[in-house]
Image: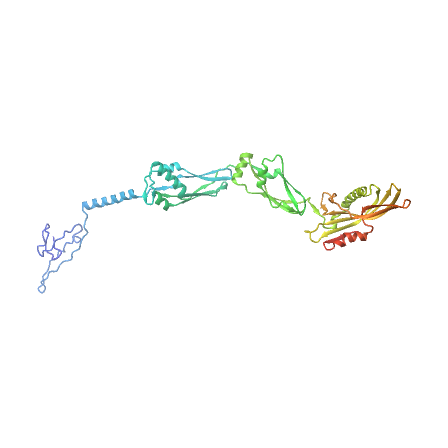
Length: 457
């Protein structure tokens, strides 16, 4: 063994150098050069330099002995055991979640269920609940209770979409897990990821055309007409179902010619399920447009007053006139003839405060007699029949009027004299002696409230 300090060759078992006393180091492994063996160079002593030239020595790598290798193995094993012993238990929540899809194509619903029993069984011995940092000594039932609380309070599952499902759709269960809180409160790791499930193999439902059993009718007077729904006796659905599903754009405030869109509201899954169970099918209906017609309308222009409508008014006037004779003259007056002279149509300037008024004017010739005195005479006078808001109906009847509320002029005094007995009898009949008086009563007095259209000559 050569000394690394002075280069002196020493015995292989020497501990100290015989030349300089330096402690010798054992070189292991490697080639002669790697072991630090001094090159076979003779240390030369020059005449002028008596110091020794120390050859270069390269330090080699120390080789682990057997005991070192065993120690490393032991340390690694201890670390691995520690990781296993102190690693927090982990649970994949997806293993306990199931998505189910039930119903018919287009009306199916999705729901989820959690296998709580299996979750309890898998976690009951792994949950280590803590409160305030202190361990709780929980019994088996206690741990089962904690597992239930974990699911109900620390995990949230939502389904999207949840209903109205059809073949080809995809349902996603969105799972939110409060991992940090679970780890702190239960000492267990719970992980989860969203779950997707395709919708397929749904059976088509029996569909029933709802509008096959429904008809529509408008009633009333424009512009306040009303749309009524009539359900046939053989309709398989209840009136409640029909009213719930019908979507009518407008039912009130209608006039002839208005267009109303009629369709159906979306059928929610619960209603679809009810219809299938109770009525054997799901109602459907194609949207359509209904045109309003047949409503009465108030007269607003003279073109709506046709000859046919006046013929009807003539009949009503005659009946009213004869009835008034019987009432006011005790039957002592009779109608000889009547001539329609025209009409005054008064249209309100502001409908809020007034109604349309129609005055149909007549010239009347009548006979009067007094049986007690044998008095008789023939008279002519002018009268009218007044209608408030006369109703014009296109396509059904020419004109509808309220006969009961039809009015006549104020009473005109009619005094009958008997020259033979010098006696007189006074009657009061509805009319005016001339047209000028009637015009002033009907038109002139109302000029600020109405626009008048007259055909009376």
